Amino acid sequence: MTTKNPLPDFVAGSSKQQSWANDLRFKFLALAIDNFPDDDLRLFYYIRVLPTWWIDHRQELDMKNAAKHIRSAKAAVTKAGSIEAAIDAQLLSVEKKKIKAERYKEAQDSSVDLVLLEEIEAERGERPW
Image (tube, rainbow, N blue to C red; front, side, top):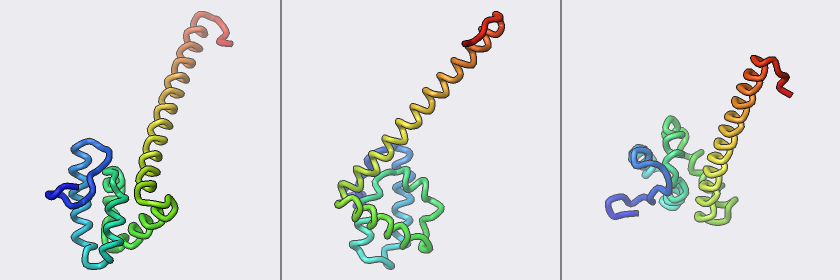
C-alpha cells in the first residue's frame, strides 16, 4: 500500500496486469463505497491481491454482483482463519495451477514424442512395442 494507492499492493502478475487490475479495483470501489460497510470493503480489497482475480471477474464487477464477491471474500477469510492465510491459499492455488499446467505440457510433449517414435518405427517396418 502506498500513499498514492491506498489499496493493498498486488502480490503477483506483470506490471501490465497490475495496472489493468488496479483500474478495475478503483472502478469497483467507486461503485461499492457508498453501499457496503467500510470493514467489508477493506476485507474484500485485502484478500483480492491477485490481478488475475480482477481481470477474470471484470464482467462481474458491478453492483449486481458486489454482495456476492464480498460474501465470497469473507467466507474465504473465515475458512482460512485469517486474511494472511486466505491470501496464502490463493497463492498456493495459483502455484498448483502452474504445476498442473507444466505437468500437462510435459505429458503432451511425451505423448508427441511417443507418436513420433511410433511413426518412425512404422516407416521402418518395426513394431513400436
